[in-house]
Image (cartoon, rainbow, N blue to C red; front, top):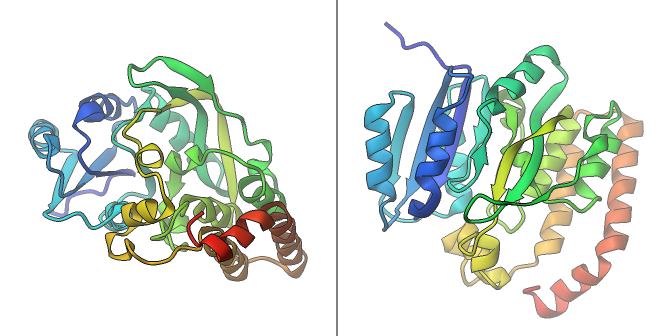
Length: 291
């Protein structure tokens, strides 16, 4: 008999995550909504990650563990867990973050009730290595607007931490995007493109806890080349033009999106404002190539 597909797929890309991995797995497996699979893709870890994952997989049949012998880069690993997913809804889970027990329950309810919502995510709190609250992240009030250009402006032109990317998405919507690109800040154009495909719904309760610690990629890798290598080791020595790449990806998102003429023009105008805001970065990219 064919095994029934779970409603939700959780994809966890991980590399050397032993410090926080068990806490994160415990939080995910304690969800009040239980119809999910947890796909773990180990990107050639050299610490205790493999041992921890295999032990958890042996105890809970919802876990599917895969291991690559060599590190293929973060972008490859994030996309791999989505390729392996079977659920109607999909969530990325970092190995170090935490979620409240009702995270999935609340997000699934939103997607079930609102067909025009492509991504549901709760308010977020930043926590430190010990799990102590640091701060509340700001709300994104226009993410749920009816007009695509307002949503696009909210997620592209207004500065924000990209924590919404760890919400619960319609797999059908995510499959229409390039997903996580192999370049720095690839989650930003992804959120921008999702905002053009439908509404993003922010649950008002803080149910997601984003951990700040010294081993995070944005702390650990000091230069753009190092960050680029984290996304894709094959591009370690290549020149990077990060803001120009973001500009290109945002424009391509507008081109691909199913927008009417008015909304498309408004989105291009948003990018005009983005260029004005980021012109110094664009200029430095051309001169220094690594800022």
